[in-house]
Length: 164
Image (cartoon, rainbow, N blue to C red):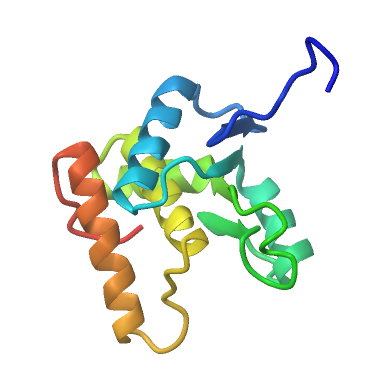
């Protein structure tokens, strides 16, 4: 390696914002994601966060998941599938619609930052292998939401009485 060449930092939290609705506190986001990863027992993993508006997430949802509608959060695991072991330090990508998060925060009476954290946490849980797909109320769904509520409480110190 050449002297002065940049190397990837283990456990990097990469943040890209392609929305103009909310100014993000990147340092706080990185700190919260590191706490999430530590609480889940997977510290030091690399995660990328992308923040978009409803149109941006609708395009991603349509192009990659064939669902032509906006949603609040999408997670893309880089640790699963045929090539999941190529770079075991990389967990994956989480895409959050800040526009949807703002609507959901208003409806729930919580701060937008807490709604965004809740959605990031939900996405990271998917990256970590938790799932809630299938019939409502399945054991897998109950486990995911119980872990999500416990981790959110550890970080923010209060419980949410709803699911975004």
